[in-house]
Image (cartoon, rainbow, N blue to C red; front, side, top):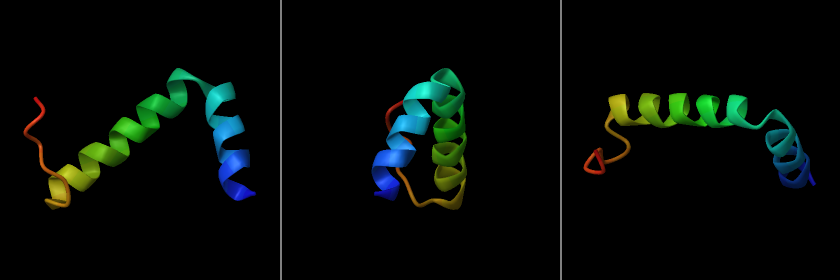
Length: 39
């Protein structure tokens, strides 16, 4: 149940987890793995 544990941890961490997720998205975007047409 790693996914559930990660979800619990993320809900506890709150905005800190959101910031980390945004950083990951930005990194993927820089690699060209994700479209950046939502800006």
